[in-house]
Image (cartoon, rainbow, N blue to C red; front, side, top):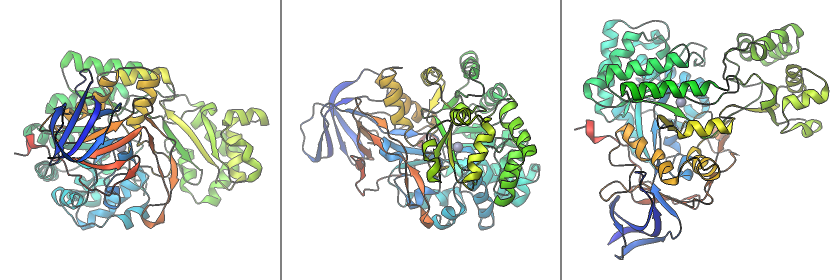
Length: 562
Ligand SMILES: [Zn+2]
């Protein structure tokens, strides 16, 4: 007797091979048979005409805290995601002694824009080591989770607050190496670090990993090399993208481990730059056979912000100063024509590369506060400025000042140009899925990278066949992270599956809900065309609703765990 029998679906098995019609039988959390099956089952799902695929594996999330109060990792599970990787960008909640927790929170709050109140109310710290953290997490999970060890936590554990002040001594580096080894032995899937010059803590200090010397990072990654285990995940590093690619290549050469670097995407401030990045990544992969992968995202990165709370100007000194002073002082600065000259020079006139788009035609008003401004919603600043006969910056600041800095703006800094996005998504050295699920919850939601990819890009733009697309979201990610029993539909492997309708699958517009610890608001995102998400043989999401099952596990790769 099977536990679950999926009848009549079309199997996209994750390998990229041609799809075929077949039934799938599941028992004890595993796939037991694929073929024309007539055995009895506790539950039969008729999936006639639908696609059956391995559950999607989201390689880049920040659900480290959220999974404690939301074990399904909403909204990822709505989009067919059955496993997530946490601990990205150098940020993890372990290892951490009680006295390091504050440093870890300070880093998460600013870099990933997760509210302090949410973290303080939502996380009940019961661990010191990575092992204890993983077992706390594993007590109640709706989806599966694989964890990277974050450099920031490791550094604070050994150096305390000195971690944001100086380089480590050889003795401290040796202690950090022991922590990385312990974390890997406890089942982590790799190590993440962060050298992104924009990443600061709540108190404006650089995140701890940014103070690491080359020797330190190399020594910590040598642990992975010695264990022949784990991936390396990089945020930043190298002076520019060319430097970042050779930095990733150096680390892959040194350790022999897969390196994921961030990221290749189209950017309005340098519209042709993605081509050079693709070519350079490909060269390293092909010429030297080094497994370096660029991350990319299928959803444009949308930034929603008011001038009460915005991080997208942090790279511009005058803006940064303005956004850190009290609101009344900030308003005086924004009103001052002399200050405006500087603001304009930094954010618009200076043509050096930037995450800020530096053009007013791609910056929109998302929501106004005053009824009289209602007609300006969804218009670009450029259009409004033209109608008012004003300069873009004056228009932008005037409306915000008029509304007590509560006007909400939205802009897409990356992946705004479809023809570029198609080429990036198709490339074999590119890993799809910078969902950043669990981060910046108040202004963006990219949980739906998988449904956006399959709906918008694979179906509507026809950039590749569905077999190949499913493989990119499943088998390839599982292979990079060493998750040998996931990412394929094969008898004997874990029964993580998604059932979807290729004709309708898509991501829906984000919505606001007020369901966070401390009653705070966040954005969620639902999917169209995803009928069932199955984790370890149990249906967790059925037609967009949670079933109440919690079959998720912490994934500890057997290959390096003995
Ligand atoms: Zn990240």
